[in-house]
Image (cartoon, rainbow, N blue to C red; front, side):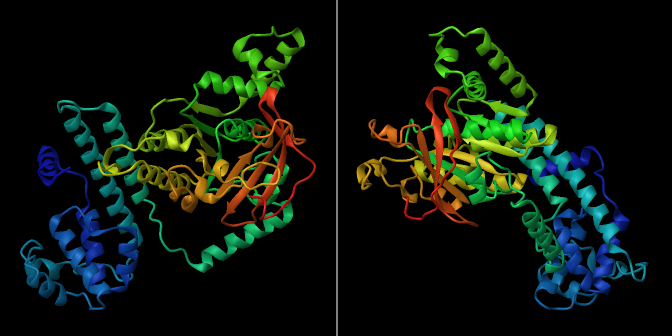
Length: 465
């Protein structure tokens, strides 16, 4: 919103602000520059309402940052040199700021007041902008709502400034985490339900981006849904599943099949009628899934902005522990994030970085499925006929391997060799783990139920991919 729009709003009604709080904070900083560190770690000069106060605050910040004392002598001189002294009210107004400032002032409460009223004004500006844009010809409601949601999130985040945390704060939290790992044998990660994966990763951690990648028809959606069922039913986690490839009913049929141990073809195609006992298994699985907190969004066209908006809303309304995206390369980039010159690889890089940012912002693990290019098949090189995998095989973007905290390749040898003695087995190859080991984990795969299960053995080796 431009300054003309802001002035129009201000002319309609006086915006909320506290003259006394603003003057007290400015006066305190002029008396003792040490207050400036606390003030500008929580608010910015733009959080002051009056223009004169914004100019003075900015001048104090600039001088203190330059190692120059900011007081009733240096500030007017600085503003005079920048031609801002008149805007600040002149020397006489600046001098009066130190009048009546209490000795040993508790400046924190004044800062909170300024920040709260600044947030209220920003909400008013954002709301007015929605009215203005909504009345424009060709206005798009989805774009306006997404931008409004982002503005409101930004306002909310501005009230909770994140920055440096001292070792005095971090060390006790770290020791508590270590004690928890020692006591329970794992970290606070969200467990997948697959024993060896959880042993190697400690579960999926808050703020992490986990990528499950495979060639088509390997079963990456099936593996993701097995993890969803384990997390949602066994661990009672709140899950958001974005399915760009399949609709919500197809996703739910797959979940029912793997939970009830019923042939997926029976549910989706009706080639064989369900028996009475099978219906009982289906109803039991349906009851479990109905009680779970699994939410599915099957929008066929989904931009990263829309996804982040919906994930934030889900977290606000009912809580959110983990997000799944099926699959990354089907997502779109729109709005201000997209330039005409961007290639698809650049778009995927934006999406990858945005998913990582969403994981950190919402403090949850984000699991994204991804396609591999044809390089593994073209490269070959395995004694058993199966291709070897490399991080560079991630389709359309090398940025995915940089942003991801964990990258897992899924491989089923029977897809390449029907005569293999490893039919019914799958390899989950952890090719990258930022904070842990890499290696190969073997799972059982029951194709008729699209179900993965634990095997009693695993092979930890960096040479398996």
